[in-house]
Image (tube, rainbow, N blue to C red):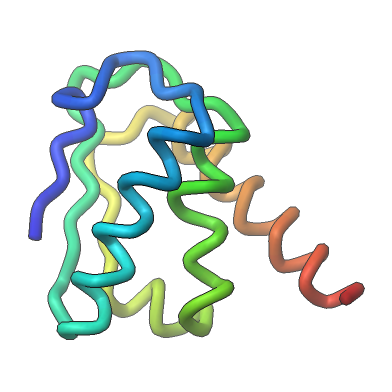
Length: 97
């Protein structure tokens, strides 16, 4: 499965969009598909979108499973940092629960 985020928008900012895409990702991961997240032409990703779409995957799968079944390509350093920070915050929150 290859998700072209530019088809969703070049500025990804809402939890609603993130949750919609996450549901597709969860189903693909259950089928053991390798998923490529392509950020070509995407300019920004908000913390909210990154948390909903990516970090909340850890509510369904271990972090190791998420890492082994997904690949991020063509993401700017800014987008990579936002996504990494969303995982860090989500995992810290889960550790406190």
